[in-house]
Amino acid sequence: MSAQPTPARAASLRTPFTELVGIEYPIVQTGMGWVSGPSLTSATSNAGGLGILASATMTYEELEAAIAKTKSLTDKPFGVNIRADATDAPQRIDLLIREGVKVASFALAPKQELIAKLKDHGVVVIPSIGAAKHAVKVASWGADAVIVQGGEGGGHTGPVATTLLLPSVLDALAEKDIDMPVVAAGGFFDGRGLAAALAYGAQGVAMGTRFLLTSDSAVPDSVKQEYLKRGLNDTVVSVKVDGMPHRVLRTPLVEALESGNSVKALFAAARNANEFKQMTGMRWTSMLKDGLSMKKSGERTWQQVIMAGNTPMLLKAGLVEGDTRAGVLASGQVVGMIEDLPSCDELIQSIMHEAHERLKVLASLG
Ligand SMILES: Cc1cc2nc3c(=O)[nH]c(=O)nc-3n(C[C@H](O)[C@H](O)[C@H](O)COP(=O)(O)O)c2cc1C
Image (cartoon, protein in one colour):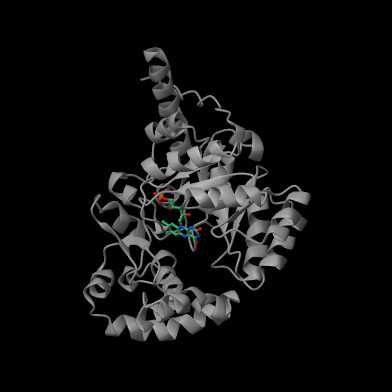
């Protein structure tokens, strides 16, 4: 028998976003705490997308080492996700500039002067946002592009689905004549999703859960198998995990928290919150600021304030140490549509082949 011919590589697809960051395909692997390390990030960038290292769960020294490692694995552009409220955010930003990192991504937008500094040194600034008014605001602060994450998305997430949040952001920017690339996130996993996002007027897609479930992610295989078993109804947005709406897999811990049976969770919370604080250099004030202001307004219980400091350690126990009993596993609803663990290259190629096919069919309708 003759060997199967290798399928041709998908044609590149250029959008203002791919031009801005210098990549071949309009696909971003987002910065996921404990998940987006050098192997996943470099594999995404080598496959023609934009890989982003997650630094919120790294010490400064670990971030330094992760950037060096990623640079040794790829010569393509990649990004780093930074918590704008970390005590050492300015030093981390200096590190990105010194190391020539192409993209700085932020869950919360940093101060205007930090955005200006990054841009002066040629670093592309991409905050993630969950509301149209925030897109307009960060554009006025000088952001180069935004990632818009709809409610389907994993981790901290908002209430509005991508199908509505995305056009609302695009409309708000158009109304103000702001020409800024928008990347859609929350619920994407295949080429149909990319074609749909482009049809809305976005310039690319960003995916978290889909990249967690690749052979290039360092998450233990037993944990990946736990994700693969889950269906579309097996995630929940809980505010009981850390006080902010957090989309996670339904686990016994999450079910206990949701039902108010949380004595064990509270015990683990107090122990792990301190460990996380020492590890990442976060200030207690930063960790608890949001929680305390919500506490004052009567929205958050003390248990939630403590859980806010604890959640990163619970996520680490699952995503790094493979102990799924810890019970906090961030995940998008899209987990219910994912059944395999391709490499980043296989994933991006299949998405691009399918997207080109869908776009051709759509063009032929007209
Ligand atoms: C395991 C996991 C960890 C995450 N950690 C972070 C994080 O540290 N910082 C952040 O800005 N977003 C984080 N997110 C959100 C993702 O960056 C991304 O916006 C989201 O996963 C997109 O939705 P999707 O899962 O449907 O693709 C996380 C998501 C997951 C699934």
